[in-house]
Amino acid sequence: MEAGAADGPSGGVEEALSCFSFNQDCTSLAIGTKSGYKLFSLSSVEQLDHVHGSNDIPDVCIVERLFSSSLVVVVSRTKPRQMNVYHFKKGTEICSYGYSSNVLSVRLNRQRLLVCLEESIYIHNIKDMKLLKTILDIPPNPTGLCALSINHSNSYVAYPGSRTTGEIVLYDGHALKTVCTIAAHEGALAAIAFNASGSRLASASEKGTVIRVFSVPDGQKLYEFRRGMKRYVTISSLAFSMDSQLLCASSNTETVHIFKLEHLASSQPEEPSTWTSYVGKMFMAATNYLPTQVSDMMNQDRAFATGRLGFSGHRNICTLSTIQKLPRLLVASSSGHLYIYNLDPQDGGDCVLIKTHSLLGSGTADENKENDLRPSLPQSYAATVARPSPSAASTVPDNLVPRRSEGQNEAVLMSSKTAPARRFWRRRGRRMQGVRLCEQNGGSGTGDAACCPAGSSQPPRPVGTGAAANPRPAVVASVSQPERPRGRTVLVYNPGFILQRASFRKRTLRKNVLTGESL
Image 1: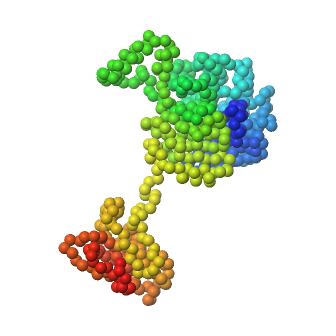
Image 2: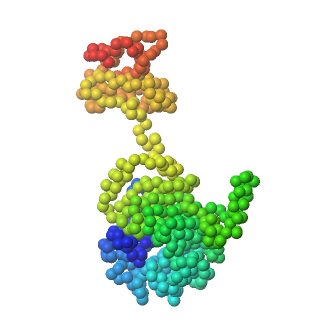
Image 3: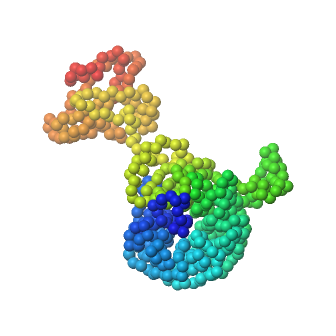
């Protein structure tokens, strides 16, 4: 889950970040620039928390953080053969190692630190940084492609076994011995990744059309997914979800594919005997007589969900994480942006972009404003659940909020004929009642329109003493008593008095007894 300098720029596109990587449990993002490096926490969708930043090391090409700890590994282009390990909270350097050639990639877990060069791999004990094993004479690996299981109980290592074919060497970093060799693809490898438990290994070739998943440590093929058929692409990253149910893949195109790792066919219950199942069985039986390439293509699964990017050509990495108890798709780009998508774990489909963060500290306000102004799109399951609850917003409908009048003793008529208003009061166990009179208490010390609290049967007590504390005379309207009330039902409110019910006919003249003005 790292994109480093070894990958190189794509198509001459100007890149703001020299490297960027997610940590092992996808709770943190590290970026490297020409001026230093930064660490961000991924605990919230709306806000990207800046954990740490340093400008002491210029032109950073590799930066890796160990889970959510204070240990960070940094490699600079000014000294590409030197690896530095820091404790950023204490501001101290733990150690520094030099190697015979440029450091191309670094991988970490709680037991091992893996340093990959072009023709060798160094395995360190992370507790005391002692060198445990040097794997020499590996095939040329100019991109530093390798993977390390984050499960420290086995610490499996995977790296290419050939420069021309998709052969994967599986190495036990705990027992320090080779486990097996997997013939994964016909072409050279482009990406490999372990799941969280180290029991599965995903791989993609340079063609980028097929992604395969193998069991670890026996190397048996479990799943085969087809990303596309029309064109070859460069797969830049593969990442499992923490529960190993989903696998995402990003490339140099504008689409991120997410595949679902269903239960194996042998463990699935037998389908009921229906016409469609019968035809399906006949169709699958017919594939045995087709050419191997055709039958393999028919057995390959397609993407469960997709995320659409607004660009192509930039280096990027993707990961699947749970943020605020909901599954999210995260994509970091070399342009200096982090894109967060909602992912529906049940139905899949198109992932909805909900937030874009600037990783360089510039343009954040404009981008967030643009996100807020973006018209609402059809939301997925996760997006629907992520909406703020209505209780967090105002509990009073707009047509019932008291409006402040310019003069005193002015009645504000609010209709109760609307269905939302009636439902609003019924839910709170109240009967709908008439006009609310908002009155500005001049000289009483409140300075605002008086209104009765939503949960109280009595209005607020007047402020002050003496004449100023006495409530104003009640606003009385001429009321006729019809046999059956018609027209509007209104609330009449006066400080110091309870709410009164009054029903008016449409033809009844309503006046304020204080001013004589018609209501």
